[in-house]
Amino acid sequence: MALREESCVTLNDGHKMPIIGFGTYAPTQFSKRLAEDGVKVALEVGYRHIDSAFIYKNEVEVGQAIKQKIADGTVKREDVFYTGKLWSTFYTPDRVRQGLEKSLTNLQLDYMDLFLIHSPIEFKPGDDLLPTDENGKPIYHNTDIRDTWKALEECKDAGLVRSIGVSNFSKRQIELILNCPDLKYKPVCNQVECHIYLNQSKLQEFLRSHDIVLVAFSVLGSSRDQKWIDQNSPVLLEDPVLNCIAEKVGRTPAQVALRYLLQRGAVVLAKSFTPARIKENFQVFDFQLSAEEMKTLDGLNRDMRYMDIRQWKDHPKFPFNDEY
Image (cartoon, rainbow, N blue to C red; front, side, top):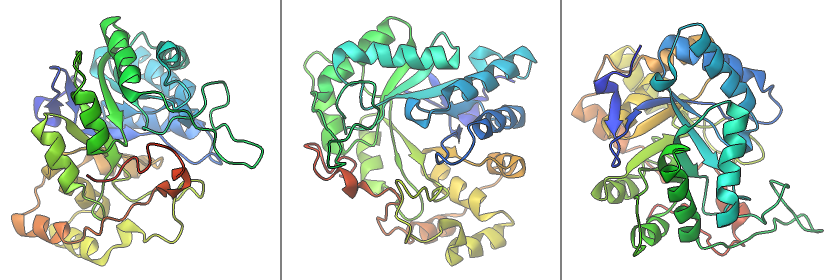
């Protein structure tokens, strides 16, 4: 099953990205086999965009699932759009390709379709992925992000990745890259937290003006991982307005939350490890929300983040994913 034209967006480098992807992150207490089983189900259902990252520590399982679904004829490699991310201890130019090649080895892939700088926050280069000092505080580093980007461009030229982009970047940080005098490739996307409570309208407007796609994560709320997420935050899928619209259109709240962002021109990452929900979340191409319903959902925005970014407040690039 090749990528359908209507379910893809053309990136600024000419490559096509499926507009709904399967997210594979899970809190550390869950088995990595969940990611492997989930990716298998997702590919069988029809997802062709798989999103993971080195820091998720599930690349081996995700790669194994892709390999098995290629072997059994479910997909061909060229049908699968794989997104990976460069972790924050690999930002010095000499380590960028190392980070990419580690991920490719884990995944058993020859190339990635999309490779992102995971966030502007950089940690001390080395084998410790979350280095801390004797007081338990993060040990930061501060490579010029433009030098990291240049090394990503070299990886693209080497054929190790087809498209390159960023994640969790603000307007100001993207402008740093766009204004490089020797810029060879623009970021194709910025992957950020985005949902009915944080619709990122200003950031999306800026990105659109530069032909950069907004890719939305946490679209259904969050996994409520205590390590990263504010535990006092509301449960998005229980929102009464969202549920009212879902009942009216005969869809689930998750389907409406996904459809809302799709109609706003975002690429969405849906995450679940329950087979029925994985299938359900993909069934968003056969209905439309009305202009009135879209306006009502616009009204739910409260600029509220699930990811608590205050833990990195001492980093020189903080705040790193402010809206504008």
